[in-house]
Amino acid sequence: MPLFYDQMKRVVNVSANPKRIVSLVPSQTELLFELGLNEQIVGVTKFCIHPADKVKNIKKVGGTKQLNTERIDLIKPDLIIGNKEENEQSQIEQLSQHYPIWMSDIVDLASALNMIAEIGEITGKSEKASWLTAQITTNFDNLEPLPAKLNVLYLIWRKPYMAAGKHTFINDMLARCGFNNIIHQSRYPELSMAEIQLLDPDVILLSSEPYPFADQHINELKEIVPEARILLTDGELFSWYGSRLLHSPGYFRTLIKKLNTKE
Image (cartoon, rainbow, N blue to C red; front, side, top):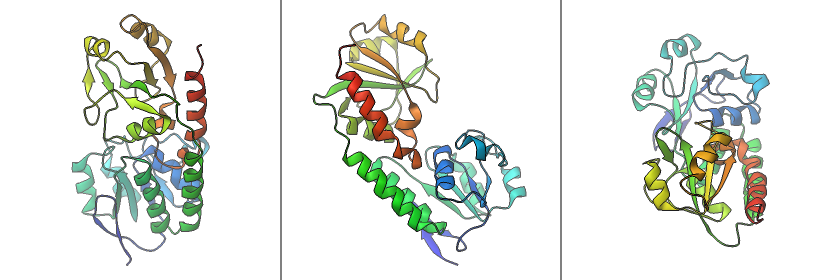
């Protein structure tokens, strides 16, 4: 049985070309379909929404942080693919006693590309994975960042407000756009309205996920930071680290162009 190491440096014993794969992360589920593993995917979470026409017929195994382990036992996977940040450690440890689990640990574009390559290898889809990583790399290489760095606040949650800080994948995407992330804390710190006002960002990006920010939230923030440019933004293109990265640079290019205008 081949030996692999996941991104948490864990040894994973898995049979060659696994036939029954359970994916516990939406962005990695989309990647598996992009790699052509349609027939091998037998379980996904309720948050795995892409590709919609394909995931609708796959058995759901709960949420990313509230897995239904009994349902996973009924599926009997020969490979589970998860993520350090998105899945609960206790549940992963429980499942690891019975099934091979390959865990990703994504903090930047480089680790995302490595994940794609490694999953391609472990599933017997190295050729397609190599094409994906090459195309994504080219697309990002051709991305021209903002000519002048703007201080940005990227919000992912409300009540309480939470922002993407350092040592996150979102932070790396912001940097590639030419933004200066105004948050210096790691991970996802909570912020009060007073703290946001004190930060005085040039730009506030309101993510579409996990909190569904809308126009009324722009008005709410305008009251405390009236000079800031506040934009709704596609959270999937900033935080999904699988094959959706093919489309992120094009979206970033449009965003950069918008911020370079006076509208």
